[in-house]
Length: 528
Image 1 (cartoon, rainbow, N blue to C red):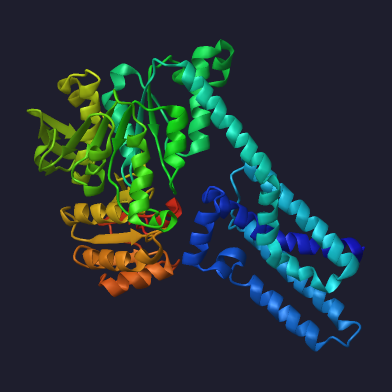
Image 2 (tube, one colour):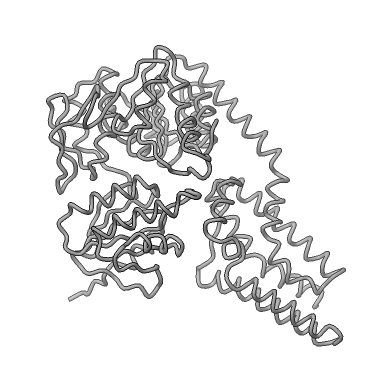
């Protein structure tokens, strides 16, 4: 019986770190560069195994060495420590603290392969070196990496096949107008604004936060098959079935060449560049490489296409000079083809004048005016009347977690948790400065994938936050130290003991965090 029991305990003990790593790597899109940068920033030991497992295995190793000559106690020690590791996994699952990867085909395949490798390793160790069974917990990063490597050739083949299929279908539709949208910040908001102002043209729009190669390729295939194969309509929601001649595609990248790949099968005829900052600069390597990567959209445009760039952002404005087609520059000052005047932030959103027309858009943050102008400029290029676009923009609804404002439990919340860039946090701080609430609190996860620039950038944000917020709460310990060094007031690292805010407060939430983290700071509601 013990022949089965002990390997099973070892496998159960290894299950939690395996699932957690699979979840984390999936969040990082199965990319080595993003995963390694995350481990560098967050600390590799805690991220790979948690706080207790390495200590438990180290304690076990020490006890085995101390009791090596005993013929009975080491077996008891082995059973005890395997049960302890298995109990950790069971506790994580029972108390719903275990992270699980989203069950996509790739996640299921890689995770199941890693689990199979773990099982084989457990059987081998029990047969030849049973005292090493607890070490299985620590080798889960290797089993998952090996599983990924085993499937990598097939994954690469399937990826090339999907991209080729998307390219073939796109080549058949020569009458399509494709609008590509890129930038470090504001891509998703601008894409949604374009969908709003171009509503009369019935555009097809990439789903929320889908902007990478394979996701966009699959979406393109699904969209264009509607036209080519009537039988495919059954697999697509009725609301999506329309033979649109206009596609709006959000384009993201983490390194040079990825937007070029996106453009190779989407073949955009219109390119929109929002704000280019320092987001993911640790992956790109330098500001110059980041600029080169984002410029791939503009460089791919045909000579009879059109580029639209944000003139308020120096890096984006530079795109006009390298565009192979005419470029339209929008902004709130300086030499621009479309400019906003009489800018005002209201309780409902942003107010401004352009082309002698007054715009009231239910979107917060004056930094978003350039995003609205980009959408208006594209609409003008496609023959839409400014007054018609104005009417559409009155009904605009931003996506949740992208500079959206709501009220819960008597607290006004700015939710910008989809973004974690320097520019987005600065915009949130600037917006909060002009809000009427007496009590203002910043809740932030800090910045990600900034490399050596992270510490000075977060110190700068800490200095800005110190002038606006009476309380700054940071969920990442290293970022908390950087914000404190910058001068953030009443700074605290997030914990379950952190106190809620008062009713009537404003809480500004930036960076990736769960909804439960925000809810932790909402005051309790007492029913009368």
